[in-house]
Image 1 (cartoon, rainbow, N blue to C red):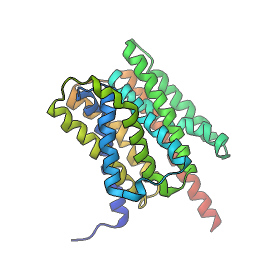
Image 2 (cartoon, rainbow, N blue to C red; image 1 turned 90 degrees about the vertical axis):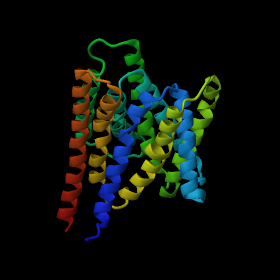
Image 3 (cartoon, one colour; image 1 turned 120 degrees about the vertical axis):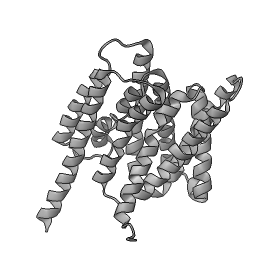
Length: 287
């Protein structure tokens, strides 16, 4: 039997991690805990998973690690709030607008060049975002959509912060981020009257597999594939998240959300291909 090449192993790892991430929405909907309670248990188990797997590497820290850990904590808490308040489709697609904030903030913070394709991508994504606020919206949809947008903004801060920090702190950032979530949300568990076995099983899956191991698997795959492959394969997450939620929970996103999400994904895909095309021509003409 032919052994898989490192490249194929990398693709398989990225795909598996994205599939794990995509299951988050349906379980967030099914678990009876409120947003903060769910965040507490999920992140506590995720922090333990990272600590067991990486030990000393998990507890390294510098100033960047702490700042990025706070961004990470905000991302996850806000996403759970959004998914509990509005549809999972709205929550995940609006969170995935993070790159448009990166395109705006990166030239200011990292002194990179602002490219014309960035402006085109931003305008496409903003057009998609407007659709999420079209039609008849309940108060929950409005607050959930805003929480999802804030999650995306924090995601952008996290991405920029991770770029500025050293690679050896990546697992520590995730560890401390989950610790921060556990601390911030710990007071919420005192309001629990009873804990159902099904909730324990589902939140354990989220903490250990959907967050903890998925991030480890993704990091492994990222070392073996190029950036465009990782970016495009990862887009399976926002596409499948509403699908699993529909199958497991019966939630149907609005037609506006579907079109808005497709526009955002299309904009980010065009940008990703443009980056790779630019790298190819630079490499070709240098030869």
